[in-house]
Length: 165
Image (cartoon, rainbow, N blue to C red; front, side, top):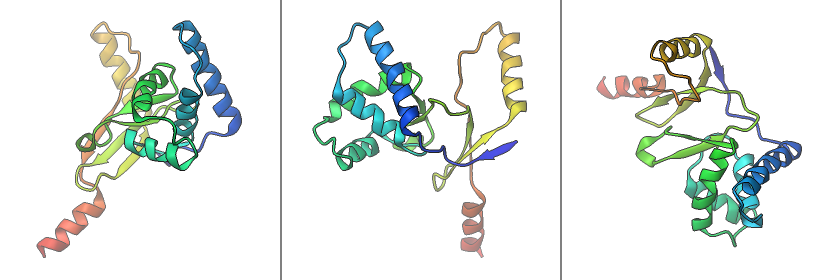
């Protein structure tokens, strides 16, 4: 098993490749190109770690894209997921859906503290192999998955022990 750090920031060349992929999907869908859509994609792709729609909207305002409306962001996000640029994660279900960059990033799973919300990203080949085996036995061909393990982190358990003492 390998614990991972939060994803690295995607550089300009990576953002350009991602926008190319997005624009291919946009053309296939018969949609017009949009500077607002591209602005949302650029800011989302440069985010590190997991983020909410509200955090993305705040970043858009901070990075000079204040003319992009919240409704536009909500419309663009599913397209970014479909294009494989972002993935939806339930990292903090009490706060609603969160996103993270998927483009040019290795697949990983999550450990989530249900007390403080801490997220630890990990990669574990044995889990991946077991999931594939389960799917094959049930006659499924996997197209993706979200694997999140919920629990209480060591820091929260230590705080609780100190509180009880």
